[in-house]
Length: 51
Length: 222
Length: 256
Image 1 (tube, helix red, strand yellow):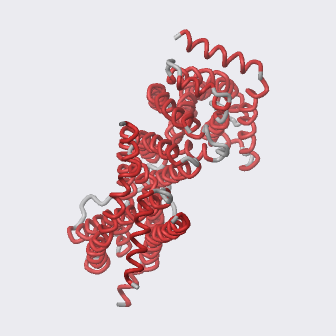
Image 2 (cartoon, chains in turn red, orange, yellow):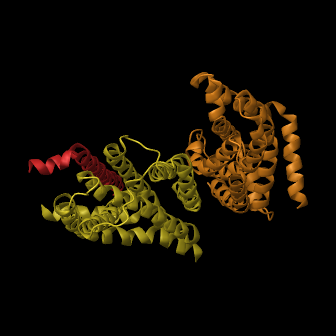
Image 3 (tube, one colour):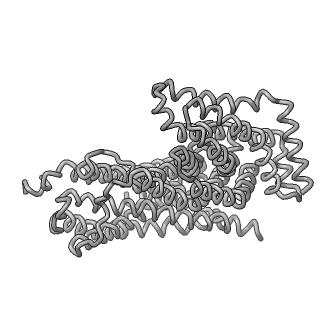
């Protein structure tokens, strides 16, 4: 297991590459979800007032 | 065709009456070139080495800056809207405007470039190629830049948007323009690079006005 | 008639698109994970280390699919731009503006992982290699498209302006790419690119293909999420949103 994380001495490069990629992808998934939730909330307000 | 010519003549006349503005791009060009020896150091060999790229970058930026006003007045006073509604071809209007704008802003730039090149110790043999590459390259910069200008014409605040849109598309011209000068400064033939610039010129001349015209239509419609 | 057709496109399409994609999303996420997990497992565990690059080549499993996606997404946007301009399909515009940040993200991933791969291989964080330079230019083009759309207030105008810029980009991208390649060979003829592996072992290839397929579904997943959010945001006052809100409320009240 230790060996696996060491990646033959390249561990820091390999894991930071995968880590940063994961982070960027995560932001891409979370941002539209938050935007969607906000839009639903705004729409809810708007159509509530309107009745 | 005659309307094309009369449009160009009108633009030239207007520019002649406002000579001060025309000079601004030239001054900007000179200033950018001046910044490099100051920032990098005035070593003659170093300057001679980077002179081709440096003059090309300065010319590119000066062209870009001058483009800002390309359609602004026509947009504000409604001329542009009239053109899009009139039976006259908007593409012809764009062509005429680009030709006159090139004559007014880029041609003086090309004329001044050799003087600036000499201050940077560019070998005198390369000056002919520098002129030729700028003559072929600056119209391409105008064509591509005009698309960006047309897309941002209707915007109130667009100052930094234009370079953002346009600069990536300037890269091929910069590569071949600077390389032509560099190669001829080293004593080789720059024919290949000049042919490619000529190819880009023809491509821009034929395709860009249509893109500019359709972008103008979009900008006017808002 | 024309006006009716136009309004049908404007309002009819989201009305159909939104619930349909809502049902598709979980499936897309499942397929993505089903491709990603074996891809990552094989890429990180079972694929043999490269005889030249050791284990650092494993960065390839995220770098190469990300670079492929950054190009694929631009191509998809260009197709959508033609559809948007010729047939005035608003949904195509939403697709372009939703894709641009995803494409930029994949380009950014390709650049960062390329840099992290390049450091042990080239000894420098950044090398002006033709591929990295082209990728960087592509990133800037994505950002330009995104900036243009956001700068124009009227979203109808913004959509058309952005479509034109996307098409200008697709004409220019090959020219830019080949001039950068040419420039690179001129200036750095001595650089031996270790990325050019002429033949790739099958055990290394399979995880790469799995990851590439996974990234396709990842794109689709993010794209639909973004399109739905953008649609809802833009059509806040429209009838179809109202209907969705009422349905949600009904479901909510029924639950209580």
